[in-house]
Image (cartoon, rainbow, N blue to C red):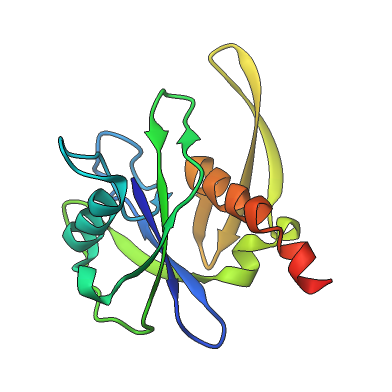
Length: 162
C-alpha cells in the first residue's frame, strides 16, 4: 500500500520520496511513502503506518479519501494506492534507512498527460512502454508514474476543465 498525500494548498502537490541509493531493491527511485501490508492490516492502515515510519507523517494529520485502483507491477506485487489530503508544510523528517530525500511535486503537473514522456525498453525479452517525468532533478517513472497516470485517467482531469 502507498499513500498519495495531496497537500492542501492553493496549488496542491503530492509528497514523494527518493529511496536511498544504498537500498537493495529499487535504489534511488522516486516512490510514494508505503510498503508491505502486515498481517491483519488494511491497505489504509499500512499506508498510514509506512508514511509515519518513512517521513514521521502523523496519521492524525492525514485525511483519507479512500483507496484507488490496485496496480499490478511487472514484478508481481499488487499495490493499493491510498488517496488522502494533508496540511501544507508539515515538519516531515525522513528516516535515513528508508528515504534519501522527499519533495512535493505540483498535482497539476503530475496529472497532466502532456507532462510525461513515453519511453520504451526491453525487459525480460519484451518491449515495454513506460512514462517518465523529471521534476527538479527527480526522475519519476515506473510504478510511481503508472499509479499517477492511472489516477489522472480515473478522475479524468480533462473533463474537469470542460
